[in-house]
Amino acid sequence: MKITKQTFITSFALFSLFFGAGNLIFPAFLGYNAGDGWFMVAVGFVLSAVVIPILAIYGHARLQGTMMDFGRKVSPAFAFIYSLVVYVISVSFPSPRTASVTYEMAVQPYFDIPSLGAIGKYLPLILSTVYFALVLLFVLNRSKIIDIIGKFLTPGILIILGSIILIGLFGDYSAMTASEYPSNLTSGILEGYQTFDAIGGVLVGGVLVVSLSLKGVSKEESKGVIAKAGLFAGIGFVIMYVGLIALGAANSGTLDIDNRTELLSLLSYNTLGNMGRSALGVLVALACFTTAVGIVTGTADFFKGLFKDSQKAYIITAVISCILGVGMGQLDVHSIIVVALPALMFIYPITIVLILLNALPDKFATPTVFKAVVLITVLFSLPDFLSSIGLSEMVQPIQEFLPFGTVTLGWLLPALVTFIVVNLIGFKKNE
Image 1: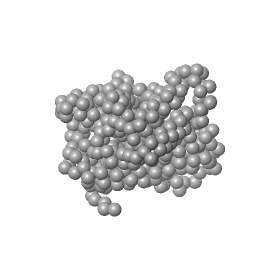
Image 2 (image 1 turned 60 degrees about the horizontal axis):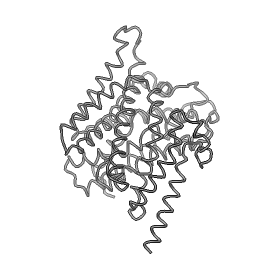
Image 3 (image 1 turned 90 degrees about the horizontal axis):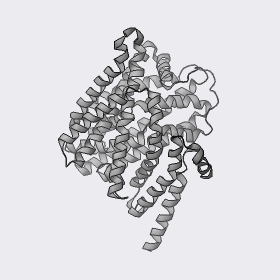
Image 4 (image 1 turned 60 degrees about the vertical axis):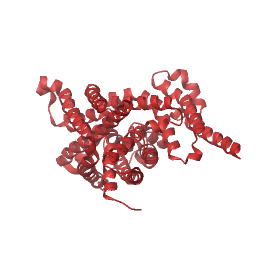
């Protein structure tokens, strides 16, 4: 397997574009709550937050297109609606969340906000405005995104986070507590939803395709670069996630915490002292910033394509996305997570199914298979969506009847059965 300099730069850029707010705040707290059941939680988290997103990158490597191509086998109309919904969700929740996490973890701990008076009251707004102004600057220079992020920002993220995990795992801790989760595996899978990384995979993969094209990389070479970069980035994610989950679990019998960001702040302080807390601030700012850049760039690319490659459409979309980021970024992290949940319950199962189908050989993923599996997924994920918007009593009997329905995975078995049945019927007809 030939590995070029471009492959390494793209791997680092891919890692940074994925590694944002959720990737930092969820794993450690997940391990903390799982205690001695941390390993199965880690397996579940890796499945939904690493395997599926990297399969999305592999799908993009094969397709060499945009997010529209992910749903085109269902129908062009579906592909358009799906892409539009994903981009709207992305700039409305995960992108603003990066600003909120940056403020709560990289700014707020270092200032006595009440003592600042009027400035303190408007500090989140001021910082969000500066934050998204810098995001916009990067997005408008999108041909240099891979090189800047891959060469300069990612190494800083890896060094800081790696130091916290390695030093922390060799600490002296009390015995781990028992897991708080009824099912460690499914809890890990569902927490992986909150990273938005499956959605990030279909979004960021398109950014890589366009960026490599702008750099003059041929489609054939781009396929290999993106596929290998996805593999290397995936290995990096597994190491970092398992390390953070294990570190959280190791502290479960020692610390008494009920807040995700507070736990991460304490872990960094306990491992690297005051320098660790400062390093965490830098780490959070870098990780969140690169993710916001990836989301806004992908969204601007999409609308640019809709308007016949119009640069004006690209700029307008980027500006609107950043303004929306400033507005939504005024909510705290917890509020954004709560508000985003219904959107995740609706779009995530469809996204997972599209990723898996696009990663399969064409003979197993015909247009008929796409249509049938996506339709069944939409129907059987509706109870989870309705439950998330406060109609749990109405759909509870359905969720209890469906296999895995009580853990919001009621769509999984029907989608799998549909995939097998439709393929068997197709093979029989061909015979």
